[in-house]
Amino acid sequence: MPLTLKWIGTYGNGALVLLAGLLVLGGLINGEFVLILIGLAVAGLGIFNIRVIRWAMALNSEEEWLQAEVRKAELRQHLAELGEFAQPSDDAPDPAPEQPPSAPTARSS
Image (cartoon, rainbow, N blue to C red):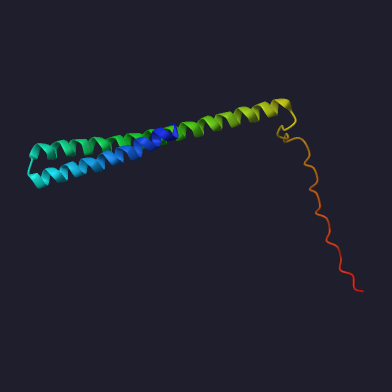
């Protein structure tokens, strides 16, 4: 999901909910019941839209992660086929671990 759609979907709908809240507040001040219902309906729709956008973002990120994992597995398989980076077999002897270079000794003058 592109970043602009995430931004518009979240913050744009948040602004819509805020405006609907102002509409409800105006309806309460004037005592208009229909205006209150319309404002509550628009606010509810905006909140629902925010939840749907966040659900789609989470779903999309999981799909991207899974796609990256599949790609890594394919690349590992391709490297193993090349043989250069293949995993050593269990029958092959382990090479001797390298010894770290010894620290120089302090000389007294």
